[in-house]
Image (tube, rainbow, N blue to C red; front, side):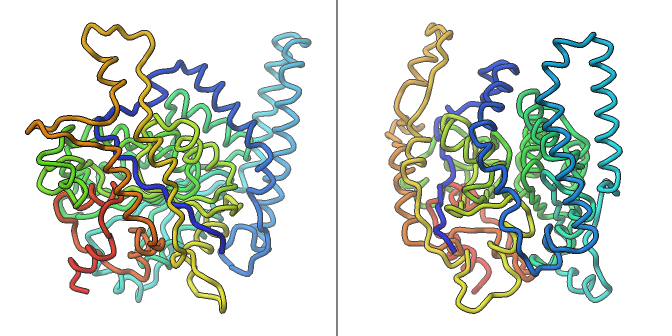
Amino acid sequence: MGRVSFTPAQIDGLAASTLRQSRDSPLSLMYHDIQTLARNALFLPLMMMPLNTMDLKAETYPNASNLRDMSLHMALMVLETTFLLLAVPAFLVLPGIVSTMIATTMACVIGIMCLPMMGPRHMRSNTSNSMLEQYRHVSDERWIFMNGCMTSSNSLQAQVDRLSETFGRPILGIHNRSYGLIADLLECVLQRALNMTTHCSRASYEHLKAYVLDPTITKVVCIAHSQGALSLSNVLDRMLAELPTDVMAKLEIFTFGSAAAHFNNPLQNLHVKGSASGLEHGARDGEGGRRHVPYIEHYTNQCDMVARFGVLNSMMQTPEQTHCGRVFMRAGAAGSLMNQHYMNTMFPLSRTANTRLFLDEVVDVDEATAMRRESIIEPPQDVGDDMGLKSMMATPRKNNDANGMKINFLGVAKAAVEDAKGKTVRDLSRLWRYQGGAKLAPLEAGFGAALMSGIVNPTKNVREREGK
């Protein structure tokens, strides 16, 4: 097992981070995203690596369904790449009607080739009567999974079954249908630049909204992979705009290899009452730093091309971008597949002899990224200063609270970094605590926000509340 890099959650105590969608035009966003994909094209062959596996639920296990899906994806990649390379010359040389007919024919061929990989829009994990009794103690929870790129209906069923087996809950999978890797990546570009909704995002919005508004449901957990995390970020934007804080507090979000350019999770209030120590030791009862969603965590492989286009690019290349949540990155690790490259390596069902678990790795805290995200504030160049906006945004992240006391958010970020040093993934992660069907107690007021800031010991607090 390689090293694990950990980046504490973005604090952004002045709420000064922004979305690129609010600053750049859609064409500029698309150009930037295509550039990002081109820069990371060398990681494309690593998306399926390593191939060898003995796990029956792994995406490349050599059974009939997986071999069919892999063959179709390879054929689609060749076809779509060839079409993209020839599309511009053909459009310039051939008459418009001919180019349109060729493009339409190609779209029909791709659609027909993808038919064997399509199935029901919604899938549930397989459950037996004995499992239903086992799930009774978590009947007040709902778990949803949104899949990523290159996922057939066969793969989605294997993924929800694997998640159910790992976390001891029934899982509802919402199928984000694949039309080949190239088409999936282009769809990601359109989703990021135009905030385009897909069936997956629309269906997920309906389910998540209904669940958090249901008074009989106390917790809603959404796990998203790759492109599914991008759809989830757009769904979360809409829910934050429509729903009250108390129901959003039911939601917990965990992503793997996220393609999202941003993840919003606004502060409930801008200032911090008292002093910085109130935030450093776990702000409670409305004392600054509290956010609408108590837990957001991102898990990623460093050489996953989709993650390098998404969460890793957002953190490292555009640090002024809003991207809430803690990030756990397996340094030097490749692979983009949910079961094979994420679940089997991060949350294995069994431990192989002489193999060190991901959860037991002592993290390398990425202090440089954490501090840079808190210190960079770029004021818009075309904004006048008649309302003092530029001077506010250009000020280092220090602010006076309601009592006139100085709050140094860079100092708080530094405290988050220092607190994480020497800890293992197990000490810092929320998701692993659900393994084996464990039921976690409801959050205390403000605890989730303090954890998101990376400045309290989650293991200690969870165990204390659960009487362990």
